[in-house]
Length: 487
Image (cartoon, rainbow, N blue to C red; front, side, top):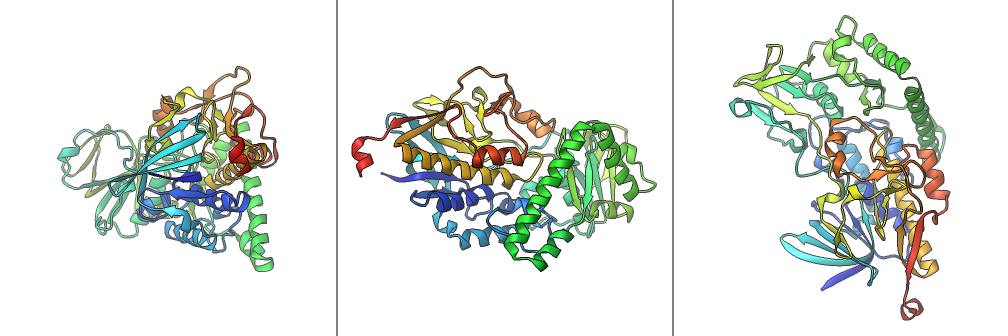
C-alpha cells in the first residue's frame, strides 16, 4: 500500500519549510507532505550544536521573504534561528504536513504513470508514497559524515578528537588546551567561543581565508523597524542587503587585487603588530571561496586579548599530547576539533531511477540551477554560494508552484527540461573550496547560456524564476486521461 500526494518534499529545514509555505500560498489545491529523516525540523540549525553556532549571512536575507525577522541581531545564533523556523512552521501550518523519522531511501519515476514512487524508512519499517512531483529540499551535505583528512598518528593521541558536526554536551573544554583545525566559517565561529573558557585555543590552518568583521546588529534595520510596520521594514532591509551584497561581490570580482588589499588592510587595523601577511593573506582571490563573516570582530578580539592564536602550517602527525607540525613545532592539545569541512551529498545520497534507468547527476545539465535535463517532475533547492541560501530557495519554491499550476491549466502530467541545442559545459559550482573540488566529479554541470546557466545573482534569478517565462526549453507532455481531467 502507498499514500499519494501531489507533491512530496524531502527535508524539513529552511528549504522544506519554505516549500510548504509556497505550495500552500500559490498552489493551495495541491496535497503535499514533507518527509524528514530526523525527529524535528530545522535541518542544519538542529543538527549543528557546537559552541557559538551562528549564521554567516544576515537574517534579513537568510530569513524567509514572507516572514519578517524581528530580533535585534542580524547575525543570529543557532538557537535563535531554530526558534524562527519553529515559529514559521507553526504560524503557517507547515508543521502539520511534516512526517518525522521518515528517511527517504529511493525514488523511481514512471513516465507511463506520470508518477514518482518514493520509499522511506520509518523506524525500521518500509513505507511507500507516490506523488506527481518530487521536490528535494534535503540540503547539500552528508548529515551522517563530515570530512576529516586521514591524519597520521590519530591513534596515538590521548585526548579527544571531535568534528563540529557531531558536537555533544559531554565535551569539556573548560581550562583545556584546544586546537581547532581549519580556517573556514566553522573554525572562526568556534575559536572565540571556546576561548571564553579554554586555557588556550589555537586555530591551525594550512592556508589563510578572507575574514570580514561586521556588526552583529544592523543599525539601519533596527531604525526602520522602529518607524515602520515590521513587514515593510523587513522588506526594505532585505533589498538593501541584497543590493549591497551584489555590489560588493561584483566589485571584488572585477578588481580582485584592490579587493584583496582592502580586506587584508581591514584585518591589519584589527590586529596591529600581528603577522597578517602569514596568517590572514590568502593565496586566492576574493570569492574564489566564500568569505568568512565574524560578528563584532569577535575572533580578532580573542586574538588581541591573547585568548586565542593562529598558526599557519602543515600537520606532520598527531602525538600523544598534541599535534606535531611540518616545521617541527608541536602544539599541545587536550582537545582537537577538526573543523575541516563538510562532505557534499546531493539528493540525500539516495538512488533515483527514471523509467528504470539510474539517475546520475554528473551526466545531466542543471536547468535554472534547480532542475535537470531529461528528468521529469523533479526539482532541488540549492542556495547561493555568494549570498544567503534562502534567497534562492524562496525563488525555487515559487517557480515549482508556477510549473504545477501551468501543468494543471494545460492538462499535462509531465514537465521536463530539454536541451534544444548544444551548450558548452562548465562546473556546477565555480568555487575552489576543498569541499567543492572533492565532489566535483559527482555534481551536475551547468551551461554557458540561459536557462542552463547557474546565476549567483538574486536579481537575475528573481526576473527569470518569478516573472520570466516557463516554456524556454521546457517540455510539457503526457496529457491527463480524459476521465481524470473531468474528475
